[in-house]
Image 1 (cartoon, rainbow, N blue to C red):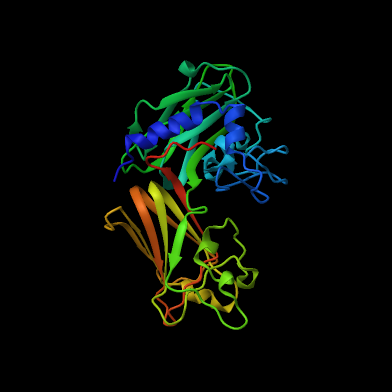
Image 2: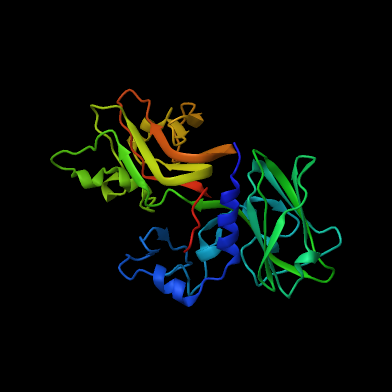
Length: 337
């Protein structure tokens, strides 16, 4: 399964093209609730302390997020590297580049799509070289560079079903590298269309507490009574489905379980992604574990995903999800924040 070239075009446009003030006005929506923005209030702010109305944070962005309107999850912070100053998210701390450059190594393979390099001073893209490896194999010979500012350069590559274990960055002698961000993708599940096998309710619990859309509302609250979790009926097959308006590729699925004694209900769940013809692309079966958070990786970078279904396999036939996050990107849509 490969990432289609159209996905790359969308990403290049997104990260290379500056957003004009007029464009910001178009996509700013003053009717959004706190921490949400976009033409359909579909993007979640990632600010340190405050909310936002258009993705820009007056007090800076929360660690672990970067890129256009800070929508991309950073996995450079999870890598082993020679200096913590280059993956700490602090662009005021910098590392003087040496001839050997700097290396990043991940314990588990990652799916590389693009990264951002932030320098202290102006740097020529021609002086930057990034080598990407799968163990000892050099898997990306000529990554493409996009100049964002004279101090900021994005590097991207499209690889079909490649697992990346480490990369090496070199640049001009005397340059200082301040921050490196590597994308895991953005949360493409937010505010998508969802459905489930019936919605639980009783005399004390209204249906709004249990709706399928609660799993993509951006709220990870694990307290079922708070109204941000799903709950299927007990008389039907326990499954939940997310449908994309356009095909997406996905790298990582994150499921947030409810808290309390009912956590066991999510153990042994099955997750399946489907293409537009309802043919399965990726299947995962949980091995009877009880966790607060489940992280599922599709190392093949599932391409052209149109829907995702999660099914509970507990004897009670009940499925509760407090949040579902899917990290990836649209295969066909040019995303404008």
